[in-house]
Each structure stands twice: as C-alpha cells, then as structure tokens.
Image (cartoon, rainbow over the protein chains, first blue to last red):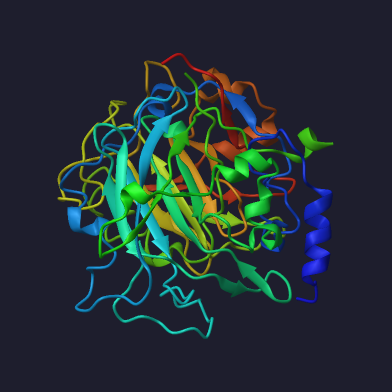
Length: 244
Length: 184
C-alpha cells in the first residue's frame, strides 16, 4: 500500500465518463477489484420463468423490531439518531411491495462489529448495526438507526470511506437483485472515494445519496433522511469493452 | 413513467454479521432422502480462493415448480422456499443443501439461478448452474456458447454432490449473464 490519494484521485479523474449510468466492474482505483472483475462481456440472455419470479418473504421472516437498530441492546447506542426511509420501486415506477430490505453499517465512530475491522475506533456495546424490514404495499421502508461515521481503509495511504449504509434489496423478479450503499448529503469524502466514484456518471452517483427530509424527523428523537431505490432487471454493469 | 435505476455498489468486507443467518444454506435439512449438496469455490483471476464472497441461489422444486413460499430466513424444516444464501469460508468454498431443481418446462435443462457478491466486486453477478445431462445442447443459452464457455455453466455430479466453481476472471472465467428486456 504505497499509493497516495493523489495517485488514486488522478486515476479516478482519468476514468470519469458522463452519461453511463451503471457501476464499473473494472475500476482499478478500487484496488481489491483488480483480480475480481470479469473481463469478458456479460452474455445477453432472456430471463427464464424462475428468473422472472423472486423469493417470497413474510411476517415469519422478519420481526418488526428489526427495523430499529437502536433497540437491539439494553442501552441506547451513542451517536446521532436518524430515520432512513423511502420507497423501493421498479424501473416503471411501480412499488415493490412486501419485499426484503436488509441494511448494515458502521457505528457512529466508524467501526464495524465485524472481526476483520481493525480500525481503532471504539465499538459500541449498544449497537450491532444490522437491520431488516419488509416493504409496505406502497414499497415503503423505514429504519431507525444512528448516523454511521466515516472510516479508514487500506486501499491506499490515508484512504477514508464516506459515511454510508449498505442496502440489500430483492425485487419482484430475481433479475432485480441489488446490493448497494446509501450515502449522506454533502459528504466531503465523495471525490476521494474510489467505491463511490466507480459509478462514472455524476447524476447516477447523486442517486446514491439520501436527502435530508425534515418531514421524517421525530421531535426530540431523531433527524430524518429520505432515499428511494429503483430496481431494474435491465440495469447494466459496465465492462471494459464498452468504455474504449 | 420510467425511473432511472439505482447503481450497485460492492457488498464490501463487512457483510458477515448482517447477511448470513442460521440455516441460510440449508434449503432442506441435510440427510433427508433425495437431497443434494451444491458446492464449489469462488476464485479470483489468479486462481486464489475468495474468502469474502456471498453466493445466493434461487431455484424451482424437484418438479420444476416455482415456489412462492415465505420462510427462507426462519426455516421451519418442512417448507421448501427455493432460496438460499451462503458466505464462502476461509478456503473460498460455499455449500448448499437442497433438492435438485426440476425442468421449468418439459425437455428443458434444469438449473439453479445464481447471484455472486464479493468484496472487490463492485456489482452483483448473475449466472446459472445447470445440472449435467445429455440434453445440454437443447438449452438455448448453453447451445449458444462454445464448448469451453459452456463448461463453466454446467455443474459436475458425483453421487449426491454437485460441484460448481465460480471463476470471477481469467481464461476459464464463468459466463455471467445480462438479462434482456422482458414484457411484464
């Protein structure tokens, strides 16, 4: 790990392309991707019936309390309490109802409970940082949590991830499966982060950022952020050959 | 009205305490008659195992019926839901206990729909793990591929075990799929 932020930023600058809305799989500034991205173009195929259906989740799968990440332990977690809410839609704008949403995140100090996270920030005995919910009939979801902190990682010297919450989503079709990350508005770390920047189009990147929403605040309790998610079975990932 | 899709982002290194759950990879209880093990390695472009990948499968039942049953996250030991999830171990191996999928239509080659996530992989990858058999060339996808590429999509059977490795990169790279437009 001898690359500096200037090295990484120069690579990010060189690879920025407007108008492509997907994420790049081949994105060298994110060093861990070097040996983990396919080099052949994806094979186009018509989805079979199984791929046009999706797993079903129900009340037996998810306890409503799992949507509140602040009540999983005896005490209150440390940090800025927030509500994160929005809707899960398909690419025709229709709600994805009754589907599973899973989230995980660092605590307010930027530390994951995961064993491999060796960042010397404090663990919070009252915060695990994982939650689940099912979307409502209108595709709505809602989590209560604390705002995660930014944290250092070893992509290059002095690399920092902007604060984010990981989201895992199922659509009404298997082809719509999505794992992504939600970011917070105005984060000063955006330009430096090769994972956020792996989406080359500025507008597509902006769609990964939640909006502060005063309507979602809870008086005396929490601030609120709104983030809608659009799932698409035709969502393209970008391969090397398309970017020449 | 059409809406611009949300881009994917890597599952990262720290999903291990959030996405795996008890019973995630046991679609049916092990040792029940007729069960199979679907297992394999996730490998990177240098042929090294990927110990921080997550593999998901979605499949019809033995008769080829698409199941629409809740209960994947809290399995009751009786209900087959068709969905499973497995994080790779330190050796890069995943393993599911399940039933072999049936054909989706008469004469079609049965397959598991597979999704792959990993640290270092910026978006999910879709593929299929087909059951081996003489009808392989009747499948529209398999028959459209040259031999060397087709092999990457067909599991190898040994008794009640099905072996299916996922190669993210390299000369034997797995065929990954992009789904075309389909009327809803």
